[in-house]
Image (cartoon, rainbow, N blue to C red):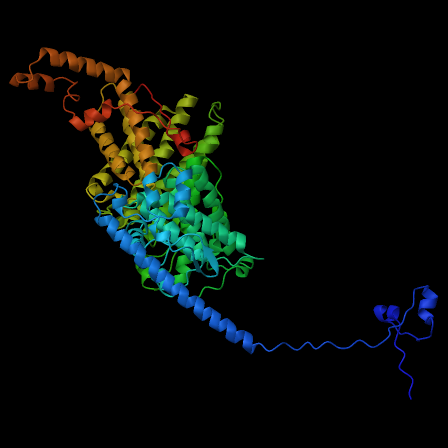
Length: 636
């Protein structure tokens, strides 16, 4: 019988060296003074073959089919139950007024009501749609059911009819196709809630649900960040969700929250490389797939520019730094709406080319025009910020200020000169961005020249600059008023959300002119009243415009309290005491006087000028730097 094979000692096997297999200690262990031990038997090789997976696959398939059938039955029950309750609430006359509007909300929204007192408690009774319990899709628990299908379709229609024209970044065809395919993952769910929230904000029927939908959108958007493992796979829906969230918060005057949300949106944009679409960067390919067609290319462009606009406006209104630098932008401007909808690839130009001399004539779309106008306003904001830091400079130390002023004035004049005709004469609000471009450029003129007036007066020099700049301000205010007279009879809820700021600047010009003039101009009173009335109409659906209208009412109250105005009123009152209004000669005598404007005011104008309001907390951004009242004795 053969002797059993002597195995290598454990120490040599561990070190993977040759062993002489001497006992009781091998030569290497004896030299190195290590413990030497030999294994008793050879290690048996483990069978690494996989177990039979067919049985597991069969049982898993059966379980998935059963789960899908149960989810389909539950979804049909919830939708039918929600629509039935929705219709019953619309027809019911004995329920509270809020219930008759057809809102459906659940226990999660009821939890929100306890935290947000702005939503009436009447919504707590609308929990019928949540009686069937939680639903599931895409492997994640949905803590509350979706709104009824009918309400979803209403809100989607409102979004694409009224909101999409101002923020045209979502491809309508692709979005509805994704919903029909049932790809209701977390990013799309968060985007839908954001769309419903901003649509509800402009709908009197659903406005009470705006805050609840907004909180859900943020919750699902944040959940996607927390649940990602390793490097995230970011979708365009994530960026669009945060962009809409920032816009909603800004419109509701939550400027700090809007700025942080827009910052998150900008970081996602940069992580995806949307700031250099068409010029791929190495780091961007790890997080997004390659562009497949012209629609996806254009949607990425538009999403970037929507984030850019949001960053500019929230930063300017709050007085905080901007996250996107113009020098790092490599994405071309958005192409036309027709090309975006028809999947036709169109050539475009860069922002630098549009800002060059004559470049404004080549902008491909109204959305590109909004980007151009907002860029000019943002540059002026940086110019205003810099001048505010060195406001009390000595004569001769402000050469850099006036050089920048002339450079920006030339760029603004060049843009106005070469702007396509369709933006100068926009007769309707079918394209609200076209109307906004004209208004925003005039507002930029007012911002720039009011800063020049303030600088010249603080330095006690350049009197000709004061006169010239004030004429430019008055002309720009007249241009804004003319545009509003053209579109004022239409549905103002379609107006761009930032138009209220531009109207406010134009109305301030009239108010300050009325305060500084020895004889107030009645036409300026009429124009200021028209702008205020327009802002009040827009403010019914956009709280940020309502804020500007309150500020304007305060300015008009200051106009009424000015010494020249009080003197006019006193003389008019004395005139009314000694003249019979029915006397035919009284009108002739009054028409010969220079104080007839007060009697010629309409009842609405008198009511507005006599109103006193409390001023809300002023914004720390461009309003605080540019919209403070100033006056000068000599009317230029």
